Figure 1: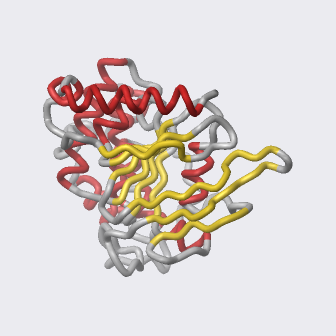
Figure 2: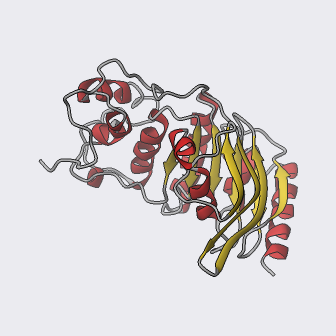
Length: 278
């Protein structure tokens, strides 16, 4: 079997680490951005972003294509360096310190095709130094809760798109980081599966609250899953509106998205998007 070249060697691995064992001072940590900007050479992608994500709050980022949403997520995680302003997590501004506090889930699930679903889910713990069997046991304890019971041995090619995303999110969550950065996690799914996954993720965040920054093109998805939504303008991205979600994430998505207060907020967000795209 092909081996993961990023995995740490067995020798010297910690045998006592558990979920959330990374050396972090707090489970819940907030994110703060002040006059944050970024450019690729002469191309400015983000300009003067002022935004706070309090600990334990889910904030969505919506905006037109190319406005810098994914770049902003990478800046938060310390995967890129800003060209101006500041971004911090619980007061920690260094990129390495931010990265240590963030679990990043990109648009593609990036499951290793030669690994089982269980080994893919356990990969974050393995990369933290946990030995294979304890890592598999820790991740396996969550398979039933994530609707994956009985699929532990399945390879990614044997899973549906929704199940692959559940494995990817389990891998993100099991890392134990206080901040989750989710970049269009359901973009590749069909409309029915996407709605089901939104309900599932809402339930997962109710059961295990985290500080979350979610990037999506879908305003309805943002309003259903998030506590607050920041609308970005066309490039260079600026925050043109911040909206509080009027309804709590419920088990019944259809009831939530047809609530009159929800509909009114969706229209407000769409107006802000149109104005910011001009």
